[in-house]
Amino acid sequence: MTSLFSKIIAGDIPCYKIAEDENCFAFLDINPLKQGHTLVVPKQETDQFFDVEDDTLCALTLFSKKLAVAIKKAYPCNRVSMQVIGLEVPHAHIHLIPITTINDCNFSSPKLKFSREEFEATAKRIQSFL
Image 1 (cartoon, rainbow, N blue to C red):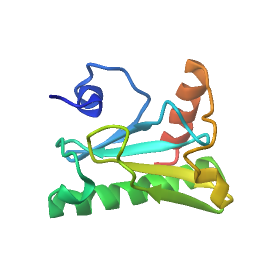
Image 2: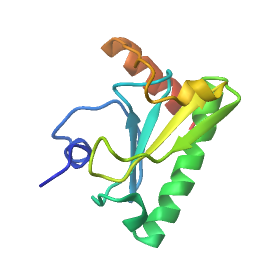
Image 3: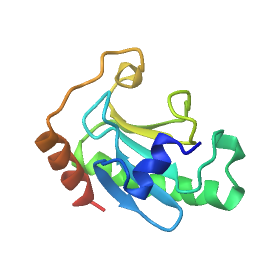
Image 4: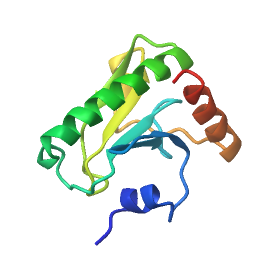
């Protein structure tokens, strides 16, 4: 069965895309912990993160690094947290979250709500630093 993220990559489900290359796809989390919270996924659907092929895993990490630099410029913070949890969707993914304190990446915290226009502005802001 095709995952939600594969449907997003294919364009069957809309998203607030940040960037993509031949191996990776990045888009805003629609239930963010912080403004700029971005998901990075391999285009090849793989359920478990450590089952991703080595070359794709390297590409995913380097792609995430570029995005993290752009996120930090767009939303000044102490760090951009990189988290792999993978329980929500059976498709390997990385959460990039701009944080100032450890509590900024607590997944049990209430999620933020943004309008379509706010999500679009967030995506454009991050893209402007890529």
